[in-house]
Length: 93
Image 1 (tube, helix red, strand yellow):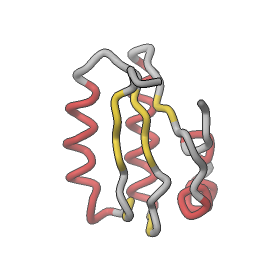
Image 2 (cartoon, helix red, strand yellow; image 1 turned 135 degrees about the vertical axis):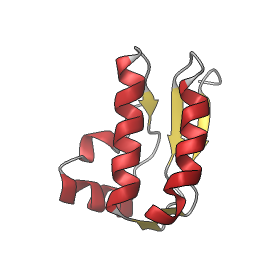
Image 3 (tube, rainbow, N blue to C red; image 1 turned 60 degrees about the horizontal axis):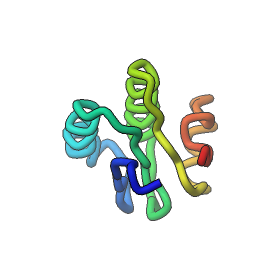
Image 4 (spheres, one colour; image 1 turned 135 degrees about the horizontal axis):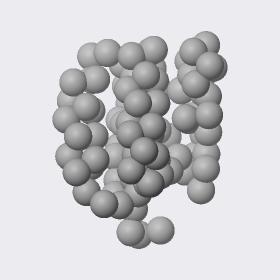
């Protein structure tokens, strides 16, 4: 799977990082490859971070690409489930 572009969400997937992550995601959307979103290191997560990740995944899908989640993160899954968006953060390799 070395042909995947990489997006590392870091330790915090929160509103404080949304602007920075959005910029990285915009660059990745301009390319023609699937993207692996690394959420393994996330320790803090909020609804803004989940909404951004869900929007990014939907944007990729609309252009016939995938947002690949390689490993589950309990913190991210818990917040996503509050929003009913857990399908966007489940491992899907």
